[in-house]
Image (cartoon, rainbow, N blue to C red; front, top):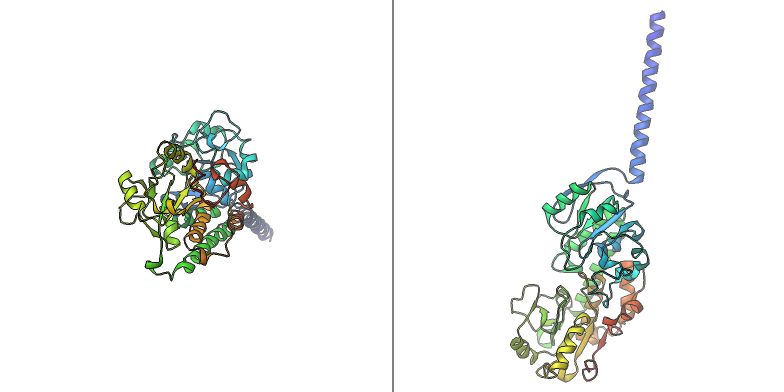
Length: 391
């Protein structure tokens, strides 16, 4: 009888212990899930598989052109614990080639970002991650735009924290790669809904522009030349693109079609002179004005063959490229291009209101006034008075 009683006591103790352990395990699992600390494997935008704990990160560093910008669309700026010198306007010694150009992500978060330590120099001339500076910021995750698998793996091993590489694709704000980057950031930082809202907004905007212009016959489309597109900060009136995505979205006839230009490229002076005679509308990117003005001062005849210049059909879009693409500006520019080429179809679109709408979705702020106030914005979207603008 005594043996039976002891066995019964032991069984009860074992059962109780099992129940306590089970409850503890459940509590740990539930706590982990609630805090976002459950580890999952994600595939970044260059195909690397990385283990992350979604929603758990408190110290973020972004490196490479466009990384901080893309993070700013989805992530919490207060979590950033270090920025590249190019994005810290409080520093006197840093890359300053883009300072006159509006970078909305920086405008929106300038107060926060200027208080942070350096995670590297950044800028077009700094194409390598600076591991020691990154380590000094003590991040628990790194968001990168250095699209090299081996270097990303090596950096991750050196830092001991996840390194997530983003990508945007050739079509920029309209590219599936950009959407993938937004969704990846949403997953990692527990902002899936925010990411989906942004992607859905872009797709809806693009679809509306395309639908408004879809039924225009080719013979009724003016020939348009886009110039001054950014390329490593140096650009002029000869820099253009054959497959300019904004033209494709808005069903615009590109005067340089068929030239086999890879991406953004420079055409020869002779070709510019030839095409100028066929150009009904010229659209100039604002970032290029600083380079075009001195050329025009030196040779005021440089646009004499341009049909658009002679008829006053020259327009200014906001700078879409400044330490990589200003994605919200690229979308707003597409609306401006569509309105410029097909004014009768976009009479309802006010560019200030559209700018505020887009920046509100991307960055949570209406930013038209700030963007247009930058020196290289020249007051905002406009038709250029060629007699005085370059004078």
